[in-house]
Length: 548
Image (tube, rainbow, N blue to C red; front, side, top):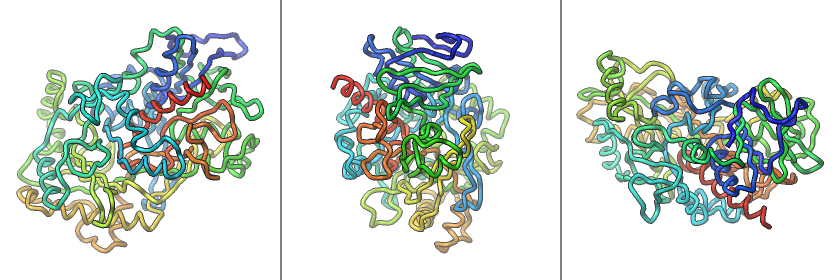
């Protein structure tokens, strides 16, 4: 494999950067999988493009390093949303990975497949081959489960999954409290039915973050038919009529082109993939016309159907126990945390952003859980800010299946300009009701006997808010994204679909989208593992179509 940074360009001075069979735009969670699988045939030439740099940054490896990789231009696109009316007019930071490994290098490392109903619904929507029974083998294909093999888990794959390497008294008590009100204890959220409360499993290897680049890309570095360009940003697609034949890129300050004999595959994520399509004249005609872009192919769904998980961060002050707030705000505590990690790869520095998880029903009439809890032995005013000085825990809860829909639309023909990201959180009244119900359920858990010895006191949002309208408003005031954007190049056969059930862009030959943007509806949980699965399944489809 050749890893090329600016200054090591192949090709001639005209900006021809070479010809390959497959060109993959985006070396994130999906792109690294595709690069591995498509280059397995030594006769197939594969190019992987990444706008960011190599993943040799110290903080990528350390699990708690997400605090230093998010909102860091070395590893993050540093996007922001538009003003969100449902969040009190706030603008949110919107981290997206810009480095080899993409979001898997900066995310929360939580391994969640979702629910069987998610995928069965995709199949019922007309997407053949995407039911739970269809996709489970692809989850298993790459899994390396630290607990060993079982009926629903596999070992020896590229994607490492392990148990948390710590526990907290306050989290154990929250699990006991959840059980008191009917949310059962569980040690496996990945059976197809994720109902219950327990510690998350994470993508780590002995206390070190495990990314898609580490699992899928780095082990095949020596393949001569695989080339990676880093710090190479895709700026547009090269079309000949209704066929995609290459990608325009900027690399080392020089504009050029890479050519694809077989296919171009967009794996730039739910923000980058629709942006690149729109910049290339593929998308909703009115949006493109507004920026002087010639319409090459009218696809009104490009950039629409944006869905995301919004977490309501409730905070409770506690007594009679230790939380990370005290340890992290003490010099001795900080020293102890550092030593514990560097000597044993254990302790708070191995912490994912959330440790204890829970999947529950906002109301008893739900068929399956529609809420996900992320519970942490810490609290802070805002993500990225210092922890509170008082002992506290955070019980974040999100609506797994929001009805609100947003969009991603270019704001300019400039490929280096951020698009407008408008998730439209809490716009649908049904989402407002779920938010209110979720806050009440959280209060019910915290009021259970198992929590009483800690004398929990609701700090956010505050017990003075009790009516549905008040709870929904306050949820919007304290909620934030957990960075699960999907759906902006949705799979399907309806008028709003962008790709078919083999992930081929409707009406454009030689072009596919393979990333979280193809999900027609969001999965019931964290989205990184499903994105890996999508790339595994897509790889088989691409190889099969090449033989047809």
